[in-house]
Image (cartoon, rainbow, N blue to C red; front, side):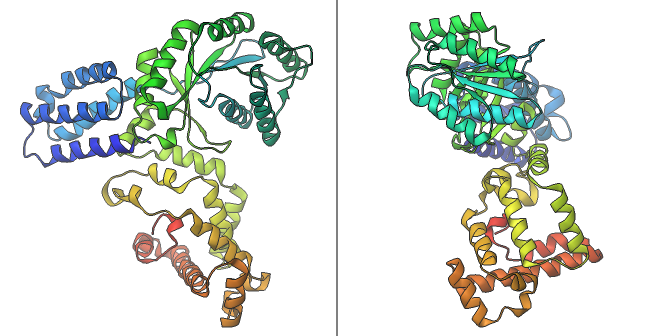
Length: 453
């Protein structure tokens, strides 16, 4: 996400650094380029105008132009104004004074409401809440069926309703009653959508809002639709009073204009972003972290949180013990690859790394997700004894392993070589040679799935 904008802004700052001395003229030129970059990223023109006025007022001051590091000050000004544009701080979900907290999910048809309802339910469940879901879309039976399937996969409850409950409000009331009786603290109401905003839809949603008194009305928008998403959010807010937005398909939107515009246009915060199809691909929106990623500073906090959430702590400690005892087997090597895969698409992981200094080209690293799958298949095709002692894997065994894993003998040889290199490197590292770790990693030809290839 934001790849195009990030690249262009970093180019502007690089050109500024190349200037012998900053002047009003070259600053004006840089600001023009920033303005064009934002417009090309599909940011709303009014938002761009407000943003550029604020940046220009601060960046053209004498204290900036004559500072020891003026370019750094300009970058800081752009970052600070971008954070303001995105919403200053993370906007958390509001909770009702007394349970259950009711959250209405609204939006146009096809924006991802039902999928986002399931993802949000999973997120809330993982963070200590006990959500119940209900679909009140009585016009498309497939929508209710879809939510039921999601709920089953997530092992979370969904209110199906009785034969008598044929209207949206009846289903919502029944779900609220069920939520209270079962001791659940949050009810997510997946509402109907239309291809376009119409009076009938808004009347139905307004009636639901008035009867349910929800703590949140979250508008779901497809980031790929750009300014259409912003326009729809604004119209829904004027008619319904949304309290926040969930922006889906952010992983497929290289421009990011909707994310950068939606808060300024509606006055309501962007609360979550969908970054993939899996049920865990929903992230809280952090304006400061997103601004840093756009400016190439990385997002290490999100990366650390993702690692802490995905990696099994006990398994990590056991792996550390094995490394210290020089007992790191091919089976452990495979398990590490599986842990790495839990972090999600490797492109998104590299996108969280700072695009500066030696890491400036890391986002362009060639990622082959299939490499990890092949690696795991090769190790799985070995016997337990072979995994425990790689030295016993002779030519005949390598042929059998290649055939069993659907790979070639050359790929098996490459894996064994990489494993041996990793063992040597780890042994040197744990034995006190840690200062050489970076150089050794640079020289090693690890699988491209590691992100070093």
